[in-house]
Image 1 (tube, rainbow, N blue to C red):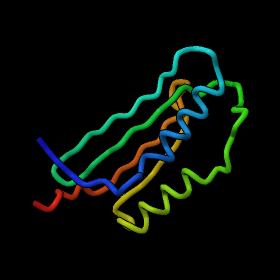
Image 2: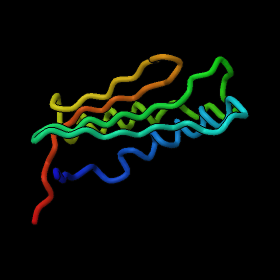
Image 3: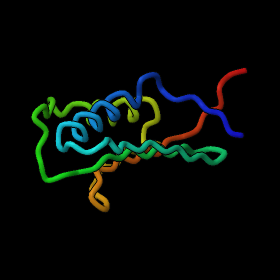
Amino acid sequence: MLAGDLPPLLLLPLIENALRHDLDCHDRPSDIRVAFAATTDRLTIHVSNPAGEARSANPGLGMGLRHTRARLQLAYGDSASLQTGLNDGRFVVDIRMPLHAPDT
């Protein structure tokens, strides 16, 4: 089993965005997905939620993705990336970053 450190609260704005845009835009049950994959030196984090035609009544300021991207850049430079897009009716955020084992 692999173990690694993640910058504190890195995923909070992504989960908040997913909740806001998922729950505000339809009356169906929520369908927010978070998945992690790791190799010996890389971590991939995948967050997605349904992307409906409706707009959120509470769109926010648009800073969550920018701040998360900036934090990754400060911590890991070009070794990390944050990509967003639409895929099969879902808004997707993919983070790729170095995997650092915790100090023991």
